[in-house]
Length: 192
Image (cartoon, rainbow, N blue to C red):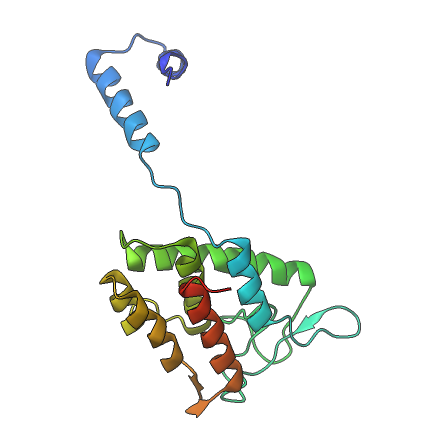
């Protein structure tokens, strides 16, 4: 990489020549910036899986999307759009489709970052990463799940088996969660 244009701009901004310590500091800063890891992202296949199971529920006749209660509890947490929950989402909350899509994009980036932090340097295929993000998107449990510990330890079959344990909501087995965990485990195993 040609660093001379960067040094020229810094010289101009400082309105003075660069001293040896300045040059060393700039080289270190450029080297550090070049070594930044690229954030892991969910692939289109992973996004499709999340969209399929989250659904865009309660679209009104006017095209707006309305919040709905958790299917397991009949109340909290209230959900809107592509599975968005949190502050400001409750009975009567209404969003546009664009708001739902924007929130999904922001949530996917956040959950992907949290999964990447949780799994660290563990070898992880894109399909495994997508399955882990879908799991975390739905459960919020990536940091505490045995599934994560098994993945990090390299026990991929054991990790894949752990998806099936996360099928309860409100103390009941939910058929939708059973189907989702089966799909996540299949994706994690690299099965289509």
